[in-house]
Length: 391
Image 1: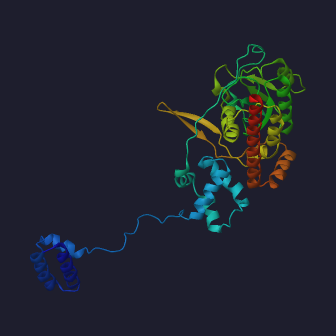
Image 2 (image 1 turned 90 degrees about the horizontal axis):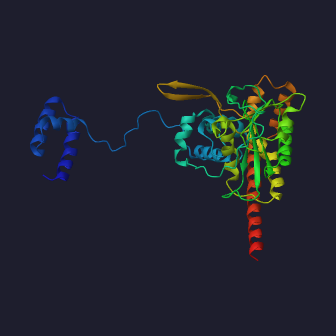
Image 3 (image 1 turned 135 degrees about the vertical axis):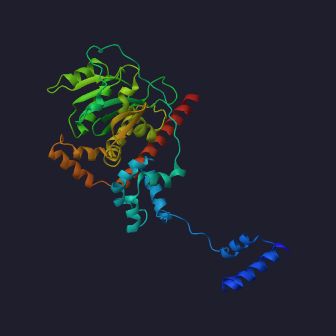
């Protein structure tokens, strides 16, 4: 008997077998075994477990996050915030979602976006992750002056009061440090993560001094301490007098030579805030300084400090030779300032009033547009200078 004949006979027998009494089932079973040549136990199982045409129901709870609109909005928010980690993206969601206007969202989708865990965000975005390598050149040169006056300090992580800054310069030199080009003076407050940036031409005292005064005027708290590396742009008598010759002197300290981890806070911000947005292009025309500062002092600082959450390292625990790092929940610098008891009430009200007027999507869109225009301008200036040189 062919396979198809056995299947046809099986379909006929099983309908009779299911509706028969015990005596008739026994007789049909004997007949089924004799015709098909099956073992009796195998025949019993086959007649009692008929094939189902429908798909097997999936086990576990039903999927909650399979709505394509939900995934699209999540990817859009992730991209608008410059690809943060899932914990920071979840912390930023309540700040960004009320201003989302690209498409109407139902209450169910909004609730899912606000309640999903970081692990769920990672799972939904696993295909979008890309590794970004670090490039660029270091331009810090060790200086010997003032080292006896400016002490080495490596316990900045113990600071809890806003006002203790770490600072560094980011060189926009492209692939060569020859000649003059634009630097960015980058500063971060250790306690809150508040950042300020200013562009300068070269590493001269006048530009650095002007940039630090501008940064200090825009900070929502007074400077209590200033920590830098051993570069000559910081270790000079002019800046030493600037911080120490005042009614309330600023604690001016430096890191150990060749120990970048002493300034871990600002080294991380050099990448996440400067390089990720401006890249590694060479800015070698002095007129670009003013253009870049217009970006830094407008949408840039508002976006970074009011709508960009970050995590802070709370402690390190060594377990069986392995170090486990414990972080707090991601918060924006503004949120940390509002929670601090070191900030005055009028200053907190000023921050709240300023925050109420901001829209993260408009800030991000305007900032990206200005950055693109700036990069295009640097490219056009380079092409013009190149054509002039060859002509």
